Length: 276
Image (cartoon, one colour):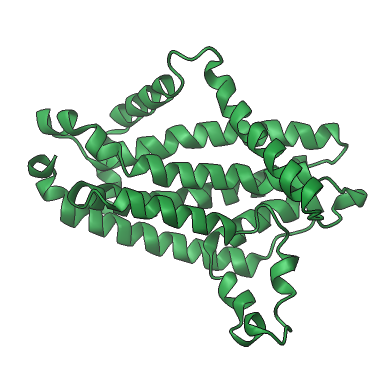
């Protein structure tokens, strides 16, 4: 893996050029341009707030200094989920979408996957900075938490990169993968505390029903996105330190997945030119 990292770093100029290409082409030809990176999550926030907060009466936990705002609670999880799911969805097509480039010349194929993650991370970073400003408008000082939030964001990127390395190369050989992943992401979204507080799941721990018998709350915490989203929500919305044990688990899982993803990519990239 160290050899592969050196290969990617050795081609960092090409990596930056590929990242710029992704950024320039993302909203090319649209009237709002980069404004769509803010409009999309805001539109989702309005819809989810109307359905879950107004209609279904889902109440967010009380945050720092008595904060009780479902939209802010939602955005703490939604922006991170949008980055992660977007990385997986777009990452699957980076190799098939650049087939001509791969056939024409040799370069580290991993650069296509990494550049996709980097371009999406730039958008993610901008969205989180805007969210930080919104918290400041509500008189919630999130500035001391920013360094640790950046660490959590980078962990999310590492996790997404590990998945993307696997999915991008497997999708070349089995094109049905994209459809299965789309379904899996829908399930994964509702299995993550984005639109509802995690306390609703923890309440099942002592339940006499099937959820309590099968320890659903403990199984639920195995989802790495739970630790990442709850960490950001703990710091910015609740003003408390995150659960470092849960973050440690996510960090270990992300590193293992990155290693495994790089291994799978290396084994399957040999015949990319023939399959594309």
